[in-house]
Image 1 (cartoon, rainbow, N blue to C red):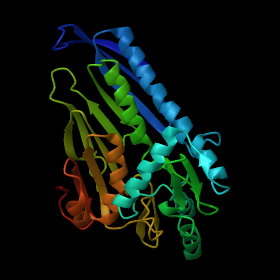
Image 2: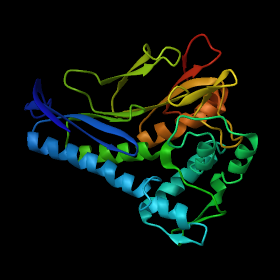
Image 3: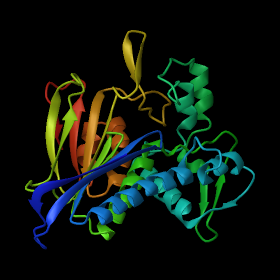
Image 4: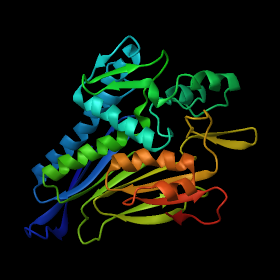
Length: 317
């Protein structure tokens, strides 16, 4: 998809007229869209195309739906012994380990068996039997990913452990796409990954930044907060993305990997951070661990918009 148009604005440095262009692709199970401004049509369109290709390349590396991806091969063969990885996948898994340690295990890319037990893997969810949760929990835990930095290898500690990059993959892709656009001297851009992770590069013409809204989790047709993004990302996780009703209550798709059950008490969390990978990775730990933990442990350069189930108002932390 490609859309290009001239706009009545100028680059503040060169004085040249700005051109607006847009494009999008479907990968990682969602849509990636870019709106960007630049001074040269062909260079702008080429930069957008290259950034979108990067999202597809990462899908081919990190997808747990594609049997031929490097990550899927780890899922298939990782229990047989140490597997030598590409530098890129090893660094990705090392970063995931670090997020897990820092979040008391609430960020965990081995959560796949629990997602399947609860029917959220390619589905809308269903209430499992307690023994199904227990069985899935036996195959969950980031310490089951055994990394050897010296030899650049990974081994999965037990049969049935599965890597699921769904809570971080889009953030990695968006950051790589931003770097491509910066390198190609794009004036400004907005990158949207599935609506849940958004990065604002620079500012659109004659504006202080990119305006982005956060939906009210109680009334999704309404806006809870309006943000202005400039060289930063926002990611949002909430119980209305995927959920089902059972036993008189809502069961959301954000599962606490320590207990095996969906986290309760929070409606949605939005994290604003300099990098998309951080904003995406931290939304679920903040959601699971609660407002008080988030207030105490969040990074100083993050802003967090917290929507609690029992609170009458939402709050910035």
